Length: 433
Image (tube, rainbow, N blue to C red; front, side, top):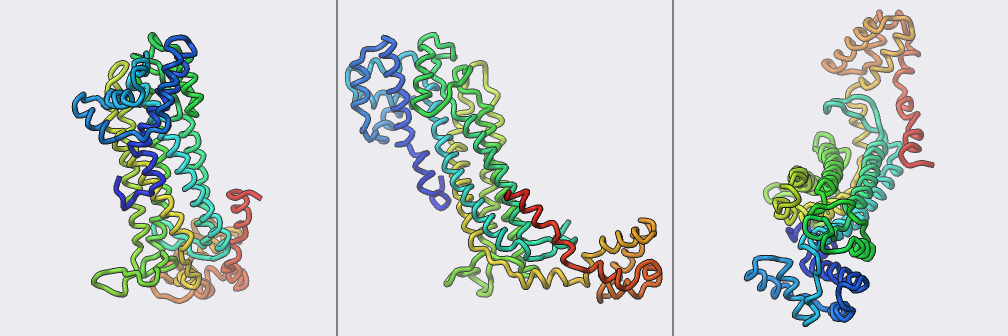
């Protein structure tokens, strides 16, 4: 985890102290149920719970691990230092993966809850800006070229809809990843009753894994990281749009530039889209976890640890980077400056050629074939591109066009309100109401 891109709330979830606290709770709840089943004495439960308020010594655990070369054994050895003689009843019938995988499920669930908070902030910001600029007309572009008018509000609404879909995906992924496995070696429950798993799952806010081997199936994890990748791509989708709109030649929107902020060490005039460029990079980092997570699905027989080293990296890193990116995205949207005047200038910069389809349709309605209509409009559109002037004037000067349409009919094709008549319908579909 890089401090520059880490919020403390997410860092705390992946900190060793939280991990060991979860390990402890898993072991304590398992011992609790084992005592109820008569496998271990009640005195063991009381001894284990006396360590409830212990702040586990990470350095001590690392010191033990350096000798035993096993992280769970190192933890159990340290726990025994606090529990005493009754510690021999801890971890009865469990295997290391029961602790590791169940802990990872808890951390992923905790992370998902934090990510959902970030997504809600992004969604709220997008909705606010969409309503604010519902009718702020601007040119729509396909292939980077002027197409037909849209509104800045529709841009925000489109991103809102994408984020809303991703929020639903994350909720499902959180629920799917939140499973508990306390099934012992090879997952057969030979040495631990399934009731222990059910109890631990209930106490830890998880569901039982229907069938584990010695590990929880990794397709669950792959799905979780794939959803994080989709959310990262949604962030980049917004970032790319803002970066393009902030270009000097466009300047329809720009990131907030605070007093005293500097854009370049060499060029004092610069105001660069540094937030959205950073978000593009953050998205790449999050997506870099997806393929390794997919590759973790295929393990040898009932268990190997080829997935372990991968998850020690992508588990904290992908969640940390996405958490940071979500709040940076929300802040950027909340303060984004929209230049409505530049939107209007760019919309009208090329002689009204964005109304070409309306003229095409009017000509077909007047009796011309689509092929003829297209040729007439394209001819005048290219003239507008190459020679300047207004498309409406070039059309009025074209005898083939005026043989089919009156000047009034031609002018009617250039009513900008025509393009906005269904904005309300789209907003109702996206936001309801």
